[in-house]
View 1 (cartoon, rainbow, N blue to C red):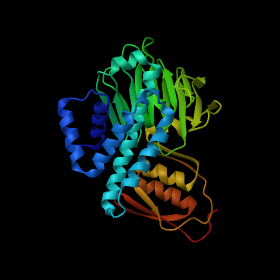
View 2 (cartoon, rainbow, N blue to C red):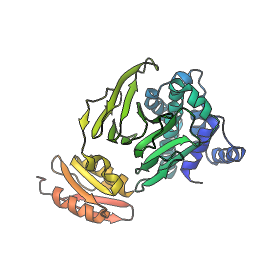
View 3 (cartoon, rainbow, N blue to C red):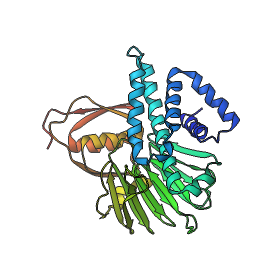
View 4 (cartoon, rainbow, N blue to C red):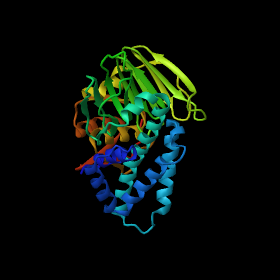
Length: 346
């Protein structure tokens, strides 16, 4: 079984829509290891708290940190290295399910009729590992371009009142027009509403910023107060070419014009850097090519790199970047080592 499948099954179990065959699969997965059982129990406990329907999506990061802390406290220090690695992978996907669970409680509060109708339908989850992108065709005619290390979840059958997508990571949405069924994308604290339009949403779990960039049509973007799940903190409408960003636990930025290549280029295989730090370069290359990058030495100074590559392999990209910021490299399957030279970076 692929890892992404078991978490869709867990979501079905928590929503009480699980198929008997899937329940057997879930029980087998739980019995495979203590780590699986521990993660499942913690997710179930959070889901069944008496006030879970009062939770807003703003609580997702707080709960994620809590679940990590609780699991880590229970984990013995004498676990073997290989088991630790496997456990962290499990936690990564468990956190995504937790965000989905909290998001669903958020939707109950704002779209009660649509959510109640959708409870009886199966949740579908689509995800990409690092180095992979995909195109997903929804039944309503909408198309989703899903970036690397990204996941969406949605009900197999949309309700009569709303089309709701939960996103972790980055995706470009080309929405089929249907005034009777607004299209909602939920990513962390942000709720993006559209009718027939196209837009990009970037909200990776390891980033402090969520961005919404509108290509065509019109969308409204809003976040909500953590103290009052029914109070709209901000609601901003975007026009084509405009972008809004949100720093988690902060406020929406002012509306700005965005660079199409920088925001949407990934769909066409364009890898774009704009005044990127070394950390940003490493993170983007790992996500884009599905590799792990280590530094054999450190650069002599701060790095700010800009460059654009279209459908280039990793070796060619590293050659070009290395020439500018002064490093050599070694590639061994999925492992890459960067070796900065002794002379100072300029």
